[in-house]
Each structure stands twice: as structure tokens, then as C-alpha cells.
Figure: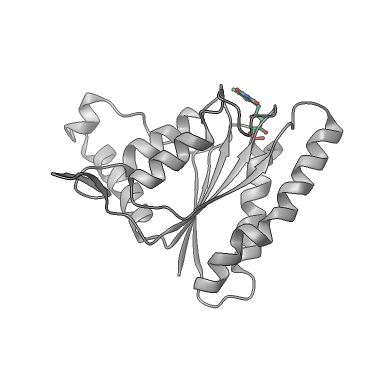
Length: 195
Ligand SMILES: Cc1cc2nc3c(=O)[nH]c(=O)nc-3n(C[C@H](O)[C@H](O)[C@H](O)COP(=O)(O)O)c2cc1C
């Protein structure tokens, strides 16, 4: 069983989502034999943004790095994604990773019946951090976007663990992190059954 652990916060060790992804990975893999965890920290080691040169594979080193990121995603059975809300959406580092894993012919394809995801069978858990309160808000372009992206790639099994309102006060932050951590067992239950 392979678990891919993705972080994308720019806040280093002061990151809420990093704390949550670490807790999810630890709780899920505890007691399971043979779990291989690979960690990609996009905040510390970002992938280059996509350019025309990237699409043309003009730089062999960049093309090889992109292929590694894609293959790492394809190989994973479980993907744990740390996704802070930045300007109503996701960090550009996470978007740059998505641009490398959403590849026609590898993770999706177009058919006469419409698009078809090719990366099904994985489970995704997203650790979401938000300064304000956005659940159900039309200004939330983070969670619906991530559901759309993973669904498009064929992954419908997507769970969210949310810490909301962390910017409202230190007390809100502490309570939101505690509530998110308390939600981890339920969010990972289906993963443990499948492991
Ligand atoms: C550049 C930037 C943009 C942000 N934009 C939003 C936003 O649009 N809405 C919101 O509720 N919080 C916003 N926040 C607050 C973060 O979502 C919040 O601090 C969250 O905990 C970030 O996760 P992290 O601690 O793992 O980095 C923003 C923070 C930063 C640094």
C-alpha cells in the first residue's frame, strides 16, 4: 500500500494543514504493515509552473521531474493533500502540482461520451485550513475545485478534514485544529477497511 503525502502551505512549521496531514498519515498508517509513505512538500520544494516549454518538454530535467510527480501520483493508493485556502482557492504550488498530474492519456482522456478519469481506485483525504468560515459559501473555490479535479481524474472517494476560522482568534484556531483532528478517525475509516 502506497501513501502519497502532499503539503502545500507556505507557512512552514506554523502551518495548520501540515499539522493535520501529519496526523492523518500517522493515524492511518499506525498498526498497518507495509505502508510506504512518500512525502512531497510543495511549499518547501515547489514544482515549476507550467509553461509552453513545459508542454513541449523543452527542458529534459523539468520533463523528468514532471514525469516523476505524475508517476508518484499514479502509483499511490492513498493521497493525503494539505490544502490551505489562499484567496478563496488553493496555493499556486498545489495548482502547479495539479497541472503536472492532470495529463491527457495518463490520468484522463476524452471519449465520444465525454471525459473519462483514468486514475480511479485511489482514495484522497484533503486537510483543509481556512482563516475564515466558508463551508457552503459561494466564495468557496477551494473544496469544490478539488472535488472537481479529483473527480475528473476518476477519483470519487475524496474526504475532507477541515479546520475553519483559524484566523479569527487563537482560541478559534486551537478549537478548529482540535475539531479537525477529532474528525480524522471517521475520515480515514473507509481507508482502514480497504487496507
Ligand atoms: C496568501 C494567503 C491567502 C489566504 N487567503 C485566505 C482566504 O481567501 N480565505 C480564508 O479564509 N483564509 C485565507 N488565508 C488564511 C489561511 O487559509 C489559513 O491561515 C490557513 O490556516 C492556511 O493553512 P496553513 O496554516 O496550513 O498555511 C490566507 C492565507 C494566506 C497566507
